Image (cartoon, rainbow, N blue to C red; front, side):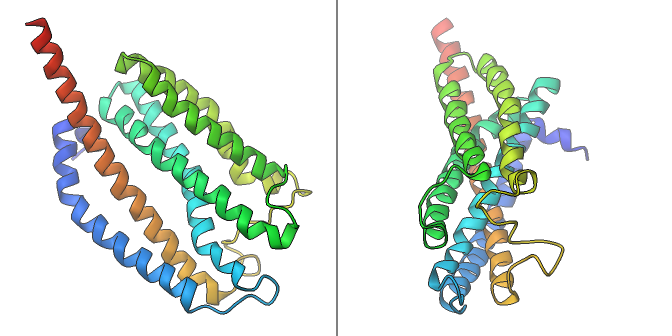
Length: 242
């Protein structure tokens, strides 16, 4: 079976019927375990105290904020190259989730950073690129809403997504490009010397897995809703013409 078969809206909806019960159950289980373990059963940090526990919200939301945009980039490119409507609708469905995750990451980052930096905000390279990414998310959503023709909206938002990917990339790698920034390096690393202590690492990984499943569940639901909305619009248009 080819993956392109799921570009058929009917097949995609059928796929969501199969996947959603599993992704929903996995989301509840992993997010529940990860967040409860992280917030209630891990010790305070010797330097940051209990503030460090915000890592279980901040890191997963920040990772998703960036990677959701890359998912939108891939689906937008599929739309531009192959003109599969499901891919364009998936990108549209993912954007509100991405902007929410970006907002959560900015808010929790400010709370986490204030005790360490003495300020809630600094024009650090990663923070600045992350804020610009947030603006791109808002612009992407606004562009979909402003253009009546769905194919034209898909074309223009796909181009915007390509441009915004530069800032998604900078958000991910700004610490490597500009070492003078305040923001710390990655909390998770293949090098054990670089990532957080094991007492935080395991529940953090579980939380990240839960957030990923949460995103998958939401994007499946929202894409299916977009497909149904497109069908209703097409039917109404036919009735008006008839």
